[in-house]
Length: 160
Image 1 (cartoon, rainbow, N blue to C red):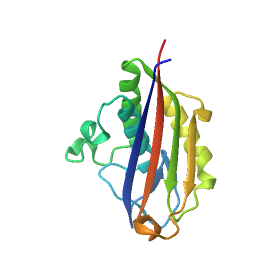
Image 2 (image 1 turned 180 degrees about the horizontal axis):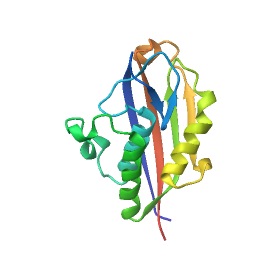
Image 3 (image 1 turned 120 degrees about the vertical axis):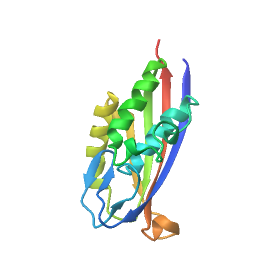
């Protein structure tokens, strides 16, 4: 069996006046993530993990923040494009695992919806997507609620 593993990481600053979008789901909160696109750190970390597994660079290569066409872009649409690239190379997702690091809001009520949205987008079963959440115990920028970060790992399997 031919397999490849990639990891991804992303962090964005929390600011007023922006929606909080994680895994393609808008979560009610007093602040949201700042970025050139919708700043969906979960989806960004997953895309970087997928691209990294195939040594294809990172999302900045494909969707640079200097390019105005990506301003305000829906990260789920970008994930669809990354998934098509991966599939065009003859690979499919074995599974994805991720961890969201945020003090607030609590992620548990939203994880099922995030898994469903990501699975639908990637055309895989939800049980192939792991999403965990933790705090940073009030340490560092995420602990001070200055931002939210995500780590992700993707296992890709060569199609037979």
